[in-house]
Length: 203
Image (cartoon, rainbow, N blue to C red; front, side, top):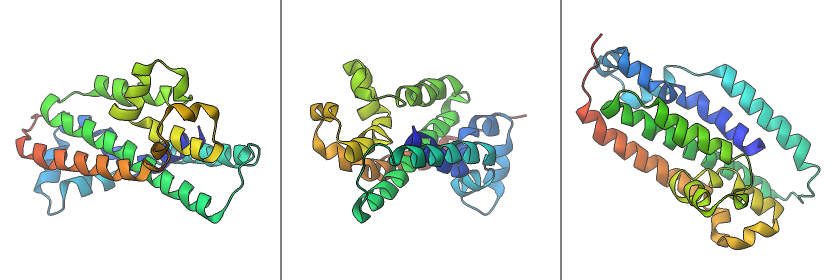
């Protein structure tokens, strides 16, 4: 839970505009962005920040981490501290990529709130538990489709080494930053491709 909350708290500082991009398109505000001499994604990312959510989720994530890390028997080393920081960065990128992909779909669909509910918020609820307790289909979703398992489950397995990790390849413990970079790169390419087909929703 600490990783889930902390990564969301950091991510929402930069992705509030992506989270709310549907309303930006529908009310015509995005048309103004297109007239300004700045990159579109740059403007969307920096036009707004949900500080309330960032402080709430991020602060809770830090508190949970400080309370739990001392009680679960982790022997902290310099490498494990570096691993943790890199994992947090990877988790931020994974969730940012999901938001960017869903935001891009608004160019085609105008309304994607139900997709966001299904592929982000509902998947995030599953991610609050060890994925090994779920049906194989849900596990596949959380690993290969909406990879929340790499935001918190596999990083925690690296630190805790619980027995249920034996059913997954060990390489999964180290893939969070790689998946984060690849996913964000693909989402960005999808954005760059799709923006050419944007049509104003009018007013």
